[in-house]
Amino acid sequence: MINVFVGYDTKEKMAFNVLSYSILKNSSQPIAITPIYLDNIKDTFVRERNNLSSTEFSFSRFIIPHLMNYQGWALFMDCDMLMKADIAELWRLRDDKYAVQVCKHDYIPKSQTKFLGQVQTVYPKKNWSSFMLMNCKKCTTLTPDYVNKASGLELHQYKWLESEELIGSLPLEWNWLADEYEPKEDVKNIHYTEGGPWFSDYSQCDYSREWWEYAAETSATGLKKNEDGQVVSVVEETPR
Image (cartoon, rainbow, N blue to C red; front, side, top):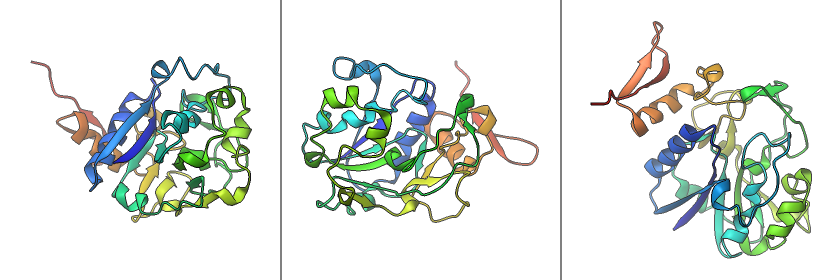
């Protein structure tokens, strides 16, 4: 069983649903998908949200090893993604010498703001924690008490690890940043980090067509296109 935890934000319900479907559709192995939803972990995760938290799961993602009883492996994904490959392929990349394996981005965001007008924070290791293979037995520092109290940079820059050598690398194709990286065909997982097609301001972002097609399969009867033939929304089934 492949354990996948997806960050859940009440402003991005559709994104969560479409991502979950894309994982299931492309997987050749059984999957267990668990939303990291604040209402479900409120007895354990009691950290208050601050102005730097662009999503409801900005810090709660680090509670995953505790939820796994510090055993086995788990994958964390932001909800603003679309899985295009078989997740079993990623699962075969696990290496027990690492505590986490991530896509090690090295970039400066093109825009100073992102979805819903939020400030685009810039820091070393940005977006590394948006897609993490976690070797839970080596993440024992991430107790509820630590996750509730540590600074954002301590968590997202992996200062809770004894050494940077415990951070393994994954090919960038597993966390391809739409509108930051040049579009290409052979990506494994698309990350709409600036904002996804479910937001009107980003309805025609890079890889929007792929997302709308999955959205149509998930919860609608078809696609709505504009005069140029571009997909702009799903066509919801008329209630009867």
